[in-house]
Length: 424
Length: 194
Image (cartoon, rainbow over all chains, first blue to last red; front, top):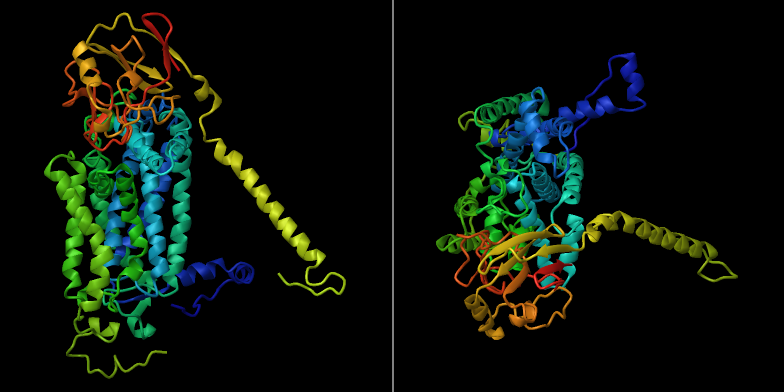
């Protein structure tokens, strides 16, 4: 959505700078970007995610000052940070709980995009960059968790890096070669820990770059909105991002920060696993390996499949399938609000992912395995079968013709002053 | 790339050749520079040099088991009872999920008989890498009181793989038998692994 620059430099210095590097103009125009007036509070998660990314980087740089990436010292250096370093406990718990809430916000953001069809034309690239951010976030969080070098860290790294050994069933020796290359040895050891630390420090900046692309791609068509129809009259249907949406986002952020503060200050370990407070031991596998809660649905898919390579491929496919969502959904209507059949399937998908999350946390025995297979089947069927078919057979509900209809009282809406403005 | 017609040389000019040659050299050079950046992650000289471990087996009684480390990996050493040896020898290779012996350094199609997975005359000793071939957990079955699974060998608690008394996969998601490391008896009661 293009909009004319409204910035006017007021001093001699800013005029001088504006003709050399129009950086203030860029920031000023960026902040007043026209944003649909009808956005609801679910749209505040983009700003919440930006806040968490910045905070994870700041706390991450700080905890890295007190951390030692060495198998003999890593666990102790964190315990020392918790006990001896001034506010070390705060920095570490903020970083640890922050990762969890970062994922919570990302999943809400992702499901919002799915519900309101934010992946549909002309926002396909915006959506795909978002999926790429999620994948890099998963890698980053996994590596960060491993650095603690507790029992769950160590065995999570062992199990997940061993996923690549499944390539041995395609070309014998290939998987083993890849795994030893990742490890830098014949087992998960000091070389592995060092490279995980190096990459864990690098990847957040890759996320920053991807977020810049994500926002750039957002600013080409502009935000989607709950009605799922495009802006036709910029003046009537949009407001500048600042101060209108910065204020709204700030309110949502305060509410979300209350949850965050409660977790950090009262139950910092609630979302974690107690076993990770046992130092890593390469000779004893914990009786029950579980990842952090935000990976559980993917872990359930991995364990549901009896074939090693099949489970690995399906787990990665659960993410990769998201890239194709813009083309799998055949509906002409963006917002699920106007889709009477699809909205039930959307509810089914939410329940399905929650159920997979539950099944990923319990031991894979008996009925739990069968249930995990059924829910895995639905997960993929939702994207590969339901999305293409429902879009074709469904008759959408009557839709407003413009965004302004959705927020103008019907009684006042004479149909003249609001609707009659033709698109430019 | 624009091709200028040259009356002496036709469509291919000297400049085209220089473009292609320079680009090709740059590509080869970039690839050559990339390799050290990739190869540095492979196991280093010190990891490769931790090649062998010597173990004295004399304190391990019949029915007992010990675990030692070799190349950072746990090695299961079990002094098997006559019943366990018989149970392992009586299995037909055709009944196994993985019919290959999985002995490091031996031909990959060696059948997974118990004889191929032990040393001649030393059938009471089973020496295997104690890493589940599924996703790398350490199976239970070394300590007294551990769940050894229904085949009396090892049981991996992570995803439920069951190994027999010869360390062969019998049930569960693991694709291969427990690997047998290279080892030799240096004396009657001592082995050198690696």
